[in-house]
Length: 460
Length: 82
Image 1 (tube, rainbow over the protein chains, first blue to last red):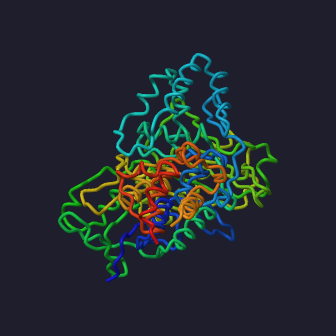
Image 2: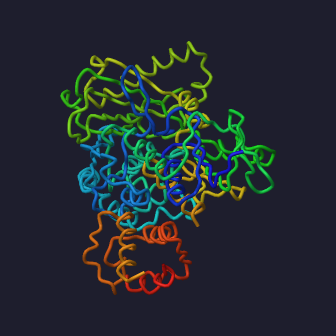
Image 3: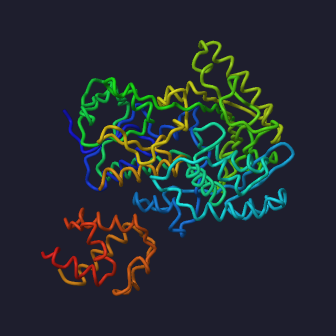
C-alpha cells in the first residue's frame, strides 16, 4: 500500500496550488484527478482541431508586476512562479448592461466610479464610502462569519437598480447563493473585478495549468490522472485510507479534498458522513462557445465581457425553465491586449440553468434542447452586441450535464454549496477542504484557497 | 559560519521568494520588512526555507529574532555552526 504525507483530491487550480506548497516543503504528495486533463472547473479541451477554454472567461485580480500586496503577486511568490510565466494580457473594457443603462468598467477603477457618478449622481457619495469600506475590509480572514452582502451594501447604496448592477457581475462570477453572496466573498470579488480587473493568459487556461503542473512536478509531487476516488475509508475521527476506482488503496497523514463538501461526503464510508447533509448548490450554468469567421472587433464589438440583464428585475436564481436567457454574460476572448490577434473570432455566452431537466433529458431530446436554447441565447445576446449569427462557423455548448460528467460537481453546481467552510476543517481531523467549498472562488481565489489551506493545515 | 555566509544564505532565500527585491542596499540594523516588500506570508516562508535548506528550526516565539539582518546573524550563527 502506498503511503503519503498528503493526498489531494482534484487537480484543479486549488488542488495544484496546495500540492505545490506541500511538495515544495518536502511533503510526499499524491494529487489525484479523475479526468484525463487537469484543471477541473477551469480547464480546456480539444474540439475540431481547436483548443477551447472552459470555466471562467477571464482571470480576475489582474495587477501589474509591481503591486506586491495584491493577491496575484502574493500567490505568485508563494508558488515561486515568475509574473511573466502566466503571460497575462489585460482586457479592453467590460460593462454591466441593464435595460436602458450601461456601466462600463476597466482595469482602471476610476472608469466605473465615473460611470456611477454620471448615471447615478445621487448615489456617488454612498458608492465612494462603500469602496472605502471594502478596501479596508480583510476579506481573506478564514474565521469571518457569513453575513449578507446585500444587507451591508444597502447601508451605502440605496438605489435598487445600482445595487443589482453592482451585484450582477459578482454573482455571475462566483456566488453559490441565490440572489446574494457572503460579504467576505463579495469583497474579494469586488476587489478582483472592479478595483483590479480582468486579464487572460496568452494561450488561455492551459498556460496557467501548465505552469502549475510543472511547478508541482519539479517540487517532487506525484500527479495521477484518470485516478478517481471511489471511497474514503473513515475511522472514528480520521480518514484511514483512500480507495481508488481501480481498486488501489492509498494511505496518507492528511487528505485535502477540492471535490466540494457534499461531493467529498458522498465518497465517505459509513453512516456518520451520510447523516451530514450539507446543502448542494442550486445554481448551474450553461455556455456556448461560438467560433466566428471574423474578428468581432471589426464588427464593432470591442468590449471584453458584458454582464447583462434584459428583464425588469435581475434574478440570480434557479430558473423554472431549463435556462434563463434574460440575463447572462457575453465574453469576447479576442478583446484582450494580446501581442497578436487571435486566429479566429470567438463569442462565449453564459446563462443560469436549471440542472434538473438537463440531467433528465433522454439523449435525443437533450440534443434538441441544446439547439433550441442556443437559438434563444443568440437572440438575447444580439440585443446587446452586433449580430454575429451569420458569421458563426462552429458552436459547442456545455450544460450542467457536461459539468457533472467531467467534474463530479453535484447537479453541475460550478460554484459549489451555498454553505462555505472557510477554515477548511471537517469532522475528521485529517480531512480538509480546499477549492470551491472552502469559499475563495475564481482562478485567483481557487489558487489562494489551495495555498491558504495547505499553509494552515499542512505546513504548521 | 561567518557573518557574510549567513547574510548570503538569507539573501538567497529572499531572492527565491521575492525575486524582484533589490538586495544591494539592505541596512543590517533596520527591520527587513520595512526595507523590503515582504508580508507575513513571505516572512513565514523565510522560516520554512531555513528549515528546508539548512535544517534550522525557528519556533514561533523566536520570530522577533529574525527582524533585522544583524539579529538574524546573532540568532542563526550558533544554529549554523558548521
